[in-house]
Each structure stands twice: as C-alpha cells, then as structure tokens.
Amino acid sequence: MRTATKVVLIFGVVFLLLGVGAFVLGVGAAEDIEDELKKYEISGENSGTIEIDDSDGIGELGLTFWVKGVYEDTDMNGIWDVCDNTEVTVTAKPSVDETWAENASEINGDFYYEVVYNYDGNESSDCAAAGKNKNHERKDQNLVKIGRACYGCTSGTFEFESNQNVWVTYDDKVGEEVVEDILGAIAGTVGGSGLICCGVLFLIIGGILALTLKDDNQQPMMYMPPGNNMMTNPQATQMTNPQFEEPKKYDMPQTTHMSQPTYDEPPQGGL
Image 1 (tube, rainbow, N blue to C red):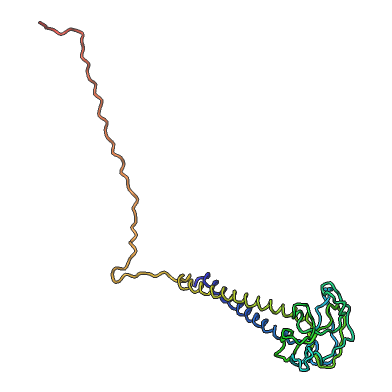
Image 2 (cartoon, one colour):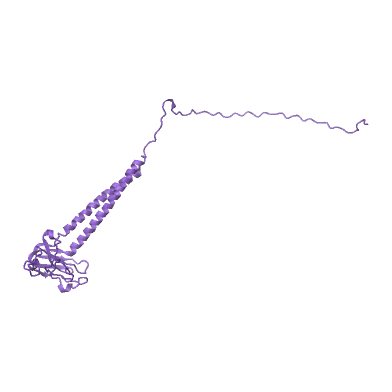
C-alpha cells in the first residue's frame, strides 16, 4: 500500500472518531437542557436564602416561584386558587438597578404574582384566571408558576418565607446554562456530523486509492520464455587492435629530356 493511501485512510479514521465523539457530546448537551430546567435554588421548602450574583452590574432578571398544583378557580373569584392559597413574604433583599429593569424600583425586589407576562396584550402581570394565563413549562413535575421576586436585584442576599412549600428557580442561572447547552448541542451535532462526513469521504477515497494504485514494494513481473527460447547473454567478443600496413612506396617516373629541334640551317630542297 502506498504511503499516500495510508495517510488518507488514517485521516479518515481520525475524522470519523472525532466526529462520533463530538456528536455524542452534542447529544449529551441537548439532554442536559432538560436537567437544567429541573434545577432549583429552593426545592419544596417554606423558607430559604439565595445569593444573588449580579456579575454584569446592571441588575438580575430575578427569581421565579413554583408550587404543586393545577390552574383552577373553584371559588370563581377570577384568581387561580394556587395563587389565592400561597403567600410569600420577602424578609431580606438586595438593592435594585433600573438600567434595563423598567419600574424595578416600584416592586423593590419584593414578591409579586405573575403567571404569564402580557397574556392579554396589555402588559398585565397577575394571577387572573384566564385561559391564556397558564404556564405549563414544568407540568411534568406537577409544578405551576405563581409569581416572581427580586426583579432587577443587584448582588446580595435574598431571603423569604412562605405559607406553602415552594420551588424557586434563579432565572439568570437557568438561562445562561440552557444557552450554553443549546450552543454545545448545536456545535456538537453539527460539527460532529461534518467530521463524520469528512471521515467517511476520506475512507472512501483511501479505499479507491488502495484498489487502484500499485504497492510501492511490488516487484515487476519477469517473463520466462519456455524451453530453449530462454534469452541468453550474447558472448562478449574481444576486439583486436587494427593493424595498419605501411603505405607502399611508388617509384616516381624518371624525368626524360626532350631534344629541341635546331633551325640553324634552312631545310634543303624546295621547288
């Protein structure tokens, strides 16, 4: 197997494992959201002390009070019975800040009845026995909301007493933890899914490379001809140094002297 193929397959396995791990963490974060909604600062008590931590210095959203029961108005007085039957008295509270909490100074950190804010479109906040004024967020725990306290409170100690056992949530804490879990769930599931897809893709590519590319260590195939047709190395022949004959000497022809005719006397005779 070629080195490049091994690298691709290793990356595929790593991405796949990381993706599965991230996806599992994302699913776990999503399941934690439900657990966060079951966390209470006070659980089934008729009094309690809660430390308010206003980390940003502009006031807290506050506390929400829940009781066991259902929304019904048996005496037909227009108020939910769970509110009529529960009284909460604040005995200690921090100061309030109106940086964002409008009219917080009017309530001054005390308890006030509220089921669904602005259920009638008129910014009402009460326990009126109206069809839209019901909060079933914790119906699976048989808890219904009856009111809130410490709206706009800064850092400090909050104490209360009640004639009924109540459950109290610190809304700022719950909100922050739920947001963190939601972001963790999104990052885990989306990121994990992406890594899983990358891992599978790398494994597919690695598999294709493994099937198509030859092994680095694979020896080339030799063809062996049968019988006497085997190839033999030609015998080496020794070359002799060339011998050169001395050039033949040729005799130059002897020079002959031609006699020149003499014209001392004119030729004899004539007509």
